[in-house]
Length: 374
Image 1 (cartoon, rainbow, N blue to C red):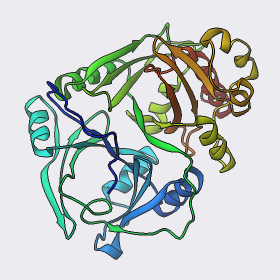
Image 2 (spheres, rainbow, N blue to C red; image 1 turned 135 degrees about the horizontal axis):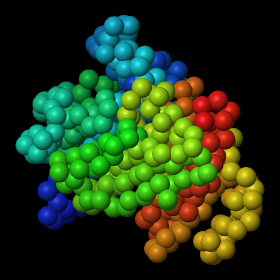
Image 3 (cartoon, rainbow, N blue to C red; image 1 turned 180 degrees about the vertical axis):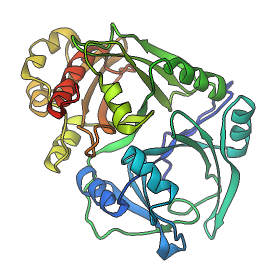
């Protein structure tokens, strides 16, 4: 089975060693149809399944993979199931941010000792392909972190799932790995959760953005980015800031009915090819006016890509001290204006596109105005 992040490295003094993201699980209203969407539009391959046909009677889960990105789409079979209640409250959304580790029991115990809330103590799952150890703790809202230890497993995903071949002929679009996952929390809660990641999981504060950095005429937010020791796991945490109108964070919290994962950034090695194929497949992106490109080269300097190609695809550019990045954001992937995706290509840059915040916010505000929620 292909590893889902860069190779494990010597983490030195890292007190909470993580190898990267193992999977992201979405609770959805109809996993079968959602799986078709991700296969057809985003080029994922269906690799494993569990459900009534495999002996799991209360739910169905489809495991999709592309590059080192792995999604699970899960739906319940009965209306009174906890998964059904989650979807009723939040709509389709992220339930689990699973982290690939070498010792799930040790990290779980460390997290609990440091004040984490237990969701599921360590348990070992076994089948003919070996064993996987999993354990879960709570994060913001109803989001969970599951530690996944799979060094003694060779199956398609984990015990309880069966390898499957989809009848859909998918074409990968160049998605490589999870770059970062962004969480939205209530006003006044950002520092609480930043402290949680620092105290419980040993993360470091990477960057802070205040309402002067991320604002427009009407709305604003504040954000802090935390990262684990090797930098493979990065979590920006957003909270709303006061503005003349309702910000995107407030809109998210209203429609999601609480804190949760706002967007998932996925890396590509060729954003022009990736975004071109995604657009051809029907994926919708936020619109940035042409005048954004009038001054972008003056701001970021020389780049390898043709500006007209970026303008045609609506791809944004920003630069920091170590290089530049290219990024673009989808519209929400369901009717509630909540979860969306970012496609990002880094050419040395380690930042998050600060120079694009105003253009991005204005694009989101145009969407809010269309929905009547600004």
